[in-house]
Image 1 (tube, rainbow, N blue to C red):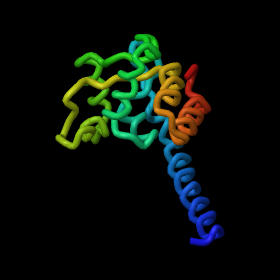
Image 2 (image 1 turned 45 degrees about the vertical axis):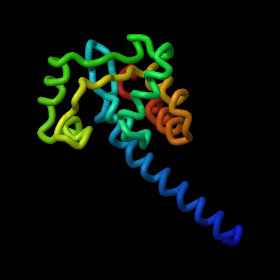
Image 3 (image 1 turned 60 degrees about the horizontal axis):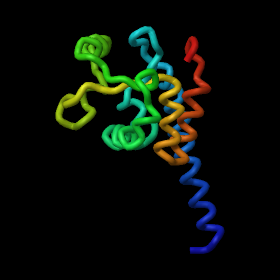
Length: 141
């Protein structure tokens, strides 16, 4: 393939990724919840934004658990999860594992936890998405 064709292809791929990230930005505000008086985002929503599977995101966190104290990331209780699900008619929380529901209670991440995710996921997408999330103005988040 000629250099100009390769350059055009690379630019087209980058533009496509940028468009999908920008369209996701409009949904970021709707993915921020207040739980335990903290603004948080759910692991499955973050995984979708970062373009990885939820299990991959959580495995990366487990491998770097010292970077994620309880104030950066915590697991929802059954009651918190049920309350969150009841807010939606059709919930993305239901289809997370392809079996009609999650097998484990989700983890949620605070702003500091989200910032730390870009360091442990180590991808350009993760960095760009984290910046977009931080740029999203929702209260103190």
